[in-house]
Length: 389
Image (cartoon, rainbow, N blue to C red):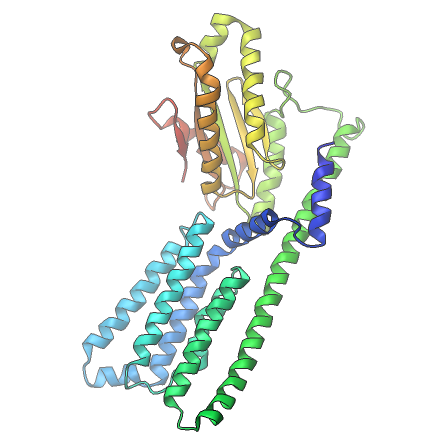
């Protein structure tokens, strides 16, 4: 039974990630799930910096002496925070998240350096130096990256304290290292506990999903619980009714856990002409062979169904628009090079792809399918790979 291997896999997960791919899948899902919090982090960070300028009296001093250059620089910095916050909402992949987090941390370090070499600022407080690294650990980032950011921030603290301290070197080292050691230990423990929290939540969600899959698999085998088999008679795939039921469940999970859910709509160009020319039996063989090619391209948790006579649809749980486009592109390449090349050119057989992802404007199965179909039909290319935003 196909579920048995999945069951064994997640039994290993309950005892810890057995394979690097599981850790990678966990990291990818959590990063994309938490990227919406980046805007809130930007706001809190900007307010903390403004509070520092107000607390030290720099804003008042600039106003008194009419230092418009410094005021303008601060205004430009605030504008950069707004731009970064806007870019944070456009993230579609883990690589973009990595670049975004590094950009935020680099501009934070640049700000600290500028303040450090400003003679009007004698001491930078610990909370300002650690503000952004600690805030960024409230979204999920890998432990190595989190520790690196905290270590760099600690280096800033040590350097600033050394410049401002008038103590003997031995006294200074004992004072600052004992303080920094305590701060670092507390931050590391916090990062570790946060990582465990996210990880346990992820494992629990996957365990519940696996339990549901096992239950519905048993229910499908029990005729008293499932008297109607929702299977397409030609291809053996799920039919439209089964797909919509599956999608409704995934959309509900998406709204509850803030997971992504995407669909790929596939249409065969000139399928009815092929059917009229060679007959129903040959048309059915074409569909079966195409399904056999597509099946290995999707995961076990995905569902491929026959949507209409010349269309298929694939439901991709916990898959962002970027990932769905990558899957659709691989399918389109495989069909073009390995499948359609077997048929005569005058038949003009090709496939069109439409990809759509759930968002705030699309909250039902019908809307999601309509979005994918609209994207596919409004592209001029006969082999379109289109997506709806």
